[in-house]
Amino acid sequence: MSAYGGPKEDGLSEYLMYGGLPQLLTQEGDEKKADFLCHLYRTVYLRDIYERNEISLKPEFEELSETLASSVGALVNALNIANTFRSKSKSLGITDKTVSAYISYMQEAFLVEKAGRFDIKGRKYIGMLYKCYYQDVGLRNAILSFRQVEPSHLMENIIYNEMRMRGWMVDAGNIFHRTRNSEGVQQRVTLEVDFVCNKGSDRIYIQSARRLPDGEKVEQEKRPLRLIGDSYRKLLVVGEHTKPWSDEHGIRTISIYDFLLNPRSTE
Image 1: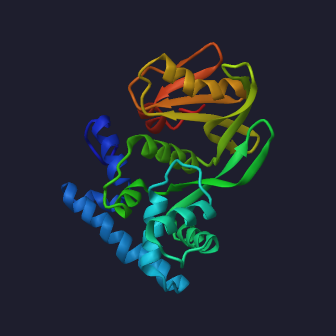
Image 2: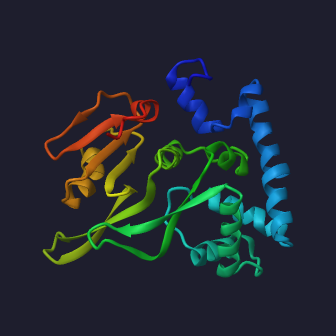
């Protein structure tokens, strides 16, 4: 924001669309910024990945890259990505091993990071599912030619990036909870905590919610945090203006503006 110079609301919209690469400051207008990011992805990132790893299936790699960019915020693994890719493209050249290799190439090129799926109460990682987040959301949008700009998922991505920048290790959390359905039958329900952030012996749980239109949505977002049952900090970050406040369960609600602009917002 010190370089942007406009209102923080416009700054956030700009950040969600074009990311935070410094070179964007030299580009004037939406068209030039979009062209810059698309050109950067193709002439720097893709070229580096292709040359470094001697990839021959270039069209398949690009289509896989688009599939992954469309899945920000969703739990995935190499096998279901490969199945999705094959059903969409009818290509037989992409296997789960190929997908795993290609994602590792994207990680090495600093395009994406993986957040593992963590069982909070069981204190262990679960299976092979994970989430992929882009180290710059502008590049993610450029990969999709700016066709899928989804504020909720992009806000989740930038919260992940902010916590990583502040030195935290970040996983996607799950709470397994037993409840009874309308017929009185006990069932196991899985609830999601967007982020489990660890730094040394410290931990923070974070939920991301673009909007909280009613009490039902508030309950949906806070319920997993309440069920955790430990004394670590619990944050609900919302995409609307609100004064920071804590409820009777110790869950602190803050706006995305305070979260991003105040380096001490998680303390």
